[in-house]
Length: 253
Image (cartoon, rainbow, N blue to C red; front, side, top):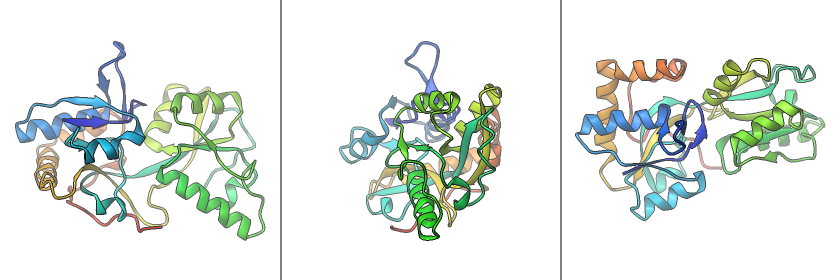
């Protein structure tokens, strides 16, 4: 049983027209893994905050939902990498006061949205503090605007309530490509800034599932189905040459 929590983040994970079938890159990765292991797949959609407990309680066997490998998470979970972690900055297409976002100073004085409890939140807070320490203006309001639903963040960006939203670049690029009159991506960065991070399948530590999942992903890489899948969803720039079990993760805070 696998859970995916990106229920509203095209092209990573979203619901089909029947409003109940999860589709997207993450559910497709789950299919690749299950097929390679000869297992029947039972896919569930859960809220992001619920995946750790679902895994620890045994309710699910694996989580495939844009989860970044961190050293802190490795204390409880094993990981099998399948994609590089890339974040992006989304702005309104007509918002000409937002510069290209390349470094911390570029977000000074802007209204910025983010999802709570994410690695992008950590980066945003670090950049904001860097600006404050340098005597620059903090982000507007002194702290981020928090959005649990990506659709709400999109509305806020389109209406001008948000100058920027930082999130998985795959989803932001998809939004900009499908609605170029409303959105534009004004910068990208690795999700492990200033280090490099990877996205991975999470399994319970000690369950011995991770090596099998890693082998399944590498099988998909070798036979080309992995590359074909990422290209289908426009994620080929985030491809990795090989999956690793428990690769180096983001350092502890």
